[in-house]
Length: 88
Image (cartoon, rainbow, N blue to C red; front, side, top):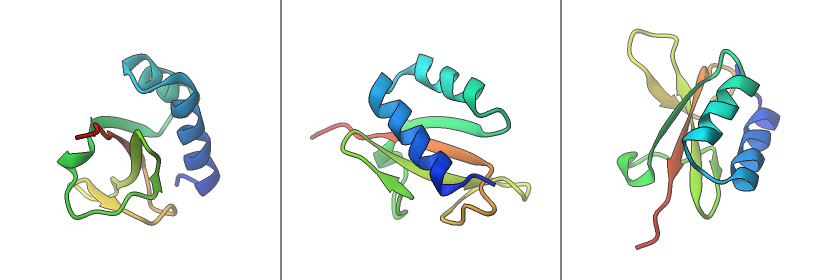
C-alpha cells in the first residue's frame, strides 16, 4: 500500500530535487519496498495520473498479479511510475 500522503511527499521531493536518476535512487532509499519506475508521460496513453504536476505525473502500479498494471487504488499500489512531461 502506498498512501496518498506518501504520493504527495514523493511529488514534493521530485519537485524540489528535479527529475533525474539520482532522485529515483533517493526515493528508493527513502521508501524501501516501493518500486519506482521512470518513463516519459506519453508512453502511458489512456491513463489518468494519481498526481499531476507541470513537469511530471505520478501513476500507481499494482504488482499483486503476475503482470503489473496501473491502478488508481492506493490500497493495492506496490509501486510508482514517475512519468516526465516534455513540453512540445
